[in-house]
Image (cartoon, rainbow, N blue to C red; front, side, top):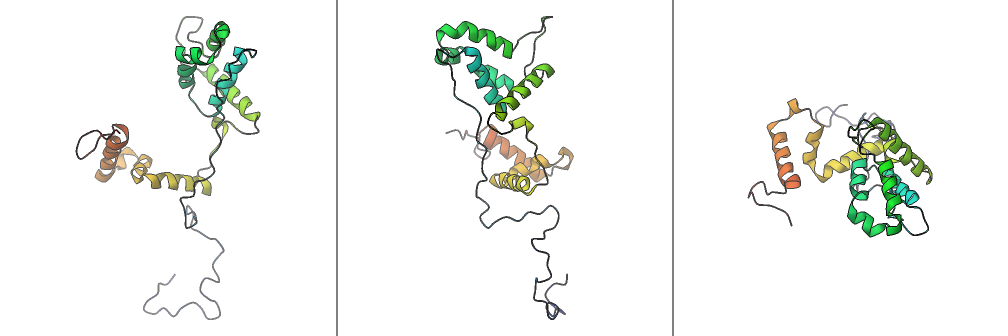
Length: 213
């Protein structure tokens, strides 16, 4: 397409500028955004429910619901176990009359060892992973929705590109996460160091002092 300048006489006669353009056409990989790109997209509602341990309701039912709701939200099984397996959680939420039943169900949901005595990693054991995925799906289906791990993301969908764009806009330094290590420039490496200092270690990269509140 000729640029305005020497020799440019405007659009062809009888065709106003842009009249022949295809409506909403954009090059592949580009997305059109409204002027205010900071409108937050609709966020999914979490499945997680508060502890529902009460007299008259079995501890098994309440614990399974509590665990399944968090699995549906994408929690790691080990993080859930760390919470529901703590003494503080049990004494705070579970009636004392249900402690024995609670302990039995907890061991069933999060077994610590196999029959041969080897330890089980609840985040990696294939059988447990399938059980947890099934629990999450069954729980989410009750609300006519899909659990976190069952949802697919189309990388070429405009909404996906918009979400990625907005995420990177919050902190442009995170763009380097999409670069292979061998292609990182000195500026990229500096951005990684600064991100580590400010977001992970929370240390002022210039003064060296902590930036924690």
